[in-house]
View 1: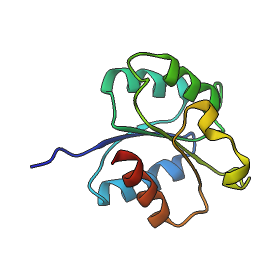
View 2: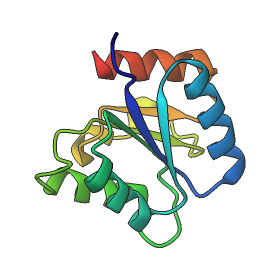
View 3: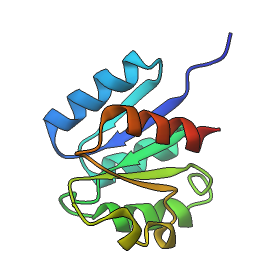
Length: 123
């Protein structure tokens, strides 16, 4: 039996954390939740998730800075990151790959698109 993929979701919004947790659990992922960057950084190093879903607008350290930290750390370097944000700048205008992220999803996108992006990045 295949082991469930672990996704770490870092977002300061409790409504978004509850929604994503429920959605990903329903899609047979194991979900870890962090409400701010330093906790998310520690969890990523300890748990070594298969993917990090990361809000850009976080209190304290921004998602962009956090992504850069993940990509500089040998323990988290190879964990793919997807930005999941309420910023409504079109995807083609965001240079998310320069920060080390594999994708950029707006929170207004249908849940199916988020799941498709996650599955695509994990393959």
